[in-house]
Each structure stands twice: as structure tokens, then as C-alpha cells.
Image (tube, rainbow, N blue to C red; front, top):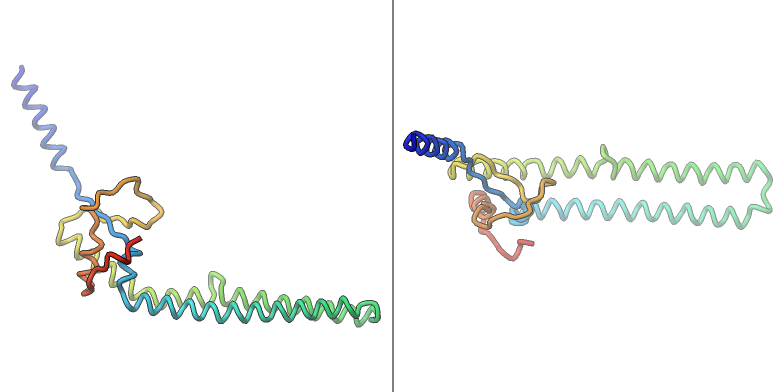
Length: 177
């Protein structure tokens, strides 16, 4: 009976060990910082965003000046002229909001530009991660920066440097957060 119990325990342990899965993680932000195309794309997007934001700010300043002039002249305007000036201010504000939405909205140019610039870079990183996973026979590779946060991660499981090397780049620890 003792031998049967020991045999059952050993078979259970073997079964559990055979179902063990290899897990690793990658810090995608750290990996991306190593890719010159990513840095260039990010700078391009930042510059474009700053230009558009400056245009939005300039137009809002114009609206503010129009409103101040209207406030100053309001007493001297007849009802028709007041209504026209109010309509002019409201239409200008609508125009600026539409411009802002067309540039910064979910379907805006910035979003589309980001997608066009980042998609090829992300595809390269994904391929490198898949190659590292296949070479190391990992069942799962998680992203350290994803919404599913790690409470603890053993540094030996971090495969970010292997992915960077697979991309043909040299890891730079100073880029880590």
C-alpha cells in the first residue's frame, strides 16, 4: 500500500512537471527605445503635434480677441450686427474644434500617422519576440508594460535584450526605466 501511495505521488509530480510552462517577459518600451526608426517616428509625430497644437492655440487667441472686441463694441451695435458678430465667433469656434478633431481625434491625422509609422516597427519587434520565444522554447512571453502588471518579475526571465539583439541592435541599459 505504501508503494502504491508513493507511486501515485511520484506520478502526480511527474504529471505536474510535464505541464509546466516556460514564461518570460519583454519590456516593450525599453526595446522600442533601441530602434532608431521608432525614435525618429516619435520625433516626427511630436513635431507634427506641436505644429497643430500651435495652430489651435493661435486660432483660440483669435477667437478671444474677437470676443473681447465684441464685448467692447456690444453697446454700440444694433441687434442684427450683434447677432452677426456672435455667429461669427461661434462659427470660428466650431471651425477650430473641427480642425482639432480632424488632427487629434480617434480618426484624426495624428492617429493615422502614428499607425502608419509604428506598424512596421511593431511588426519587426513582434517577429523578433516570436523568434526569441521559439529559440528559448517559451510558452508565453508577456509585455512588462501592458495593462496586466507584474507584482514581481525575476530579472532572469526578462528577454528584452535578446529581442534587441535579434533586431540587430546592441542593448543599452541606460534606456531602461
